[in-house]
Image 1 (spheres, rainbow, N blue to C red):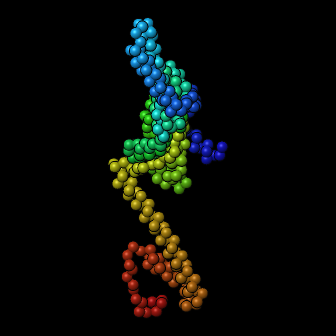
Image 2: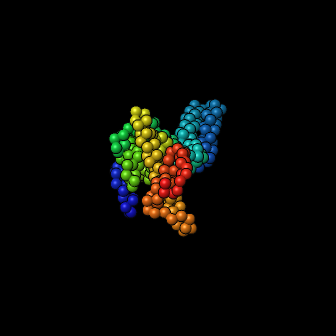
Length: 311
């Protein structure tokens, strides 16, 4: 494991090991079972109808009882039929015991005494509400996230948690809050991680923590992203002024660096072409004037020298 991976997994919670894993339930094609069930119903109805043509009381009763039993058996067998749509699964239980999962779509037949719970395996998304928390510096911020997920292990989703949808929702909110209080919105240090400046790294850590939190429920996290990130309204104006001041300082720094380079280039070309000979005092005055012209906010007002260079 690399140092980066170790940092990502350092704070993830440890969930209990799952007690049950998904496996395929024993099932057969439902077409044949449906045909046999219909034949059994017809056979039962035929025996009951045949009983009306028999005059002997014992034979009539035997035919009626046999017809009813065959029809009931056929109906009971048909209760084992299941229609499984694409993107769905059936969790099969027999007297409370897990007997497997049906993932093959179409008409399937299983033991009619089992219970089948429908569970969706489609891709879903969950978007948290806008959460208000304090970042690592104690500043109140607002953030929200969206998580794309799906059920990977239907047995864990059914038996390991009470409600896997609510579980994903709660754990997503917990992970987002934990990430928010661990990092600042804006880092004061240049090499520090921040929610706004290092979105990719923070999103990666969020995905790792989410995976660790919901893995016990058999849920796979496909993607997670922040959809809203801002300072809380009560400090937004003050922080905006700070950001604007930082932007102004950065712009000024770039302007000064460019101006110094231009002045240096100008002095070098004057000296190279031997246009005029300047002493140190006049060089300093020229540098000062050029810097004022290049770094000023307003257009400079030129002053015409009617005398010599030194008057």
